Image (cartoon, rainbow, N blue to C red; front, side, top):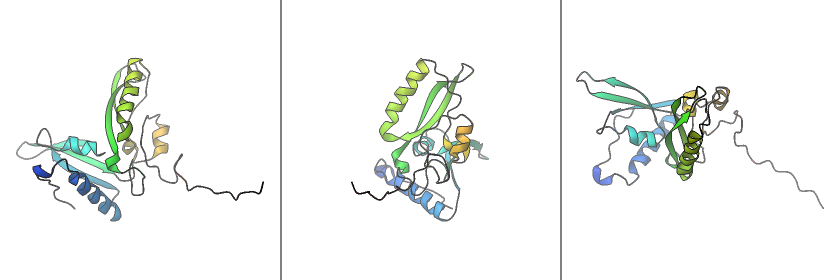
Length: 182
């Protein structure tokens, strides 16, 4: 268990928080933890937005005996990122996008995408929204415990998922064929 991650204000925006967070998640995965959870204050004193930028998902709020609101954030290790993924958590961004659902109503969805394409993804989905293109649901693969097959069966629109070898479209080792003489 890790009690606190604190970065002094003079060291913020240097990347040290992301390094500490990544190391914590790596250590937890090595210890066999399937989920990592954290609690942060809600509002301007909390770090929820920071954690969400690094792929954590809000999972609810609780009240302290003093009445302060605390948010629970969670990263599912079997979901969109795991050890061995070519994209690091620092490479990923969580974007929230409005879309039209199959009932013609406006819904809010979440995609986890590579930082390099985040702005393009927002532009594309804004155009789809403007054209009223229906999307049944848009949830990160964490909502499906990292199971891409379950996500697809639920007609979910998702983006980044570092698939496990037993899932559809999982990366495979290159298959080499012996060359044949010409």
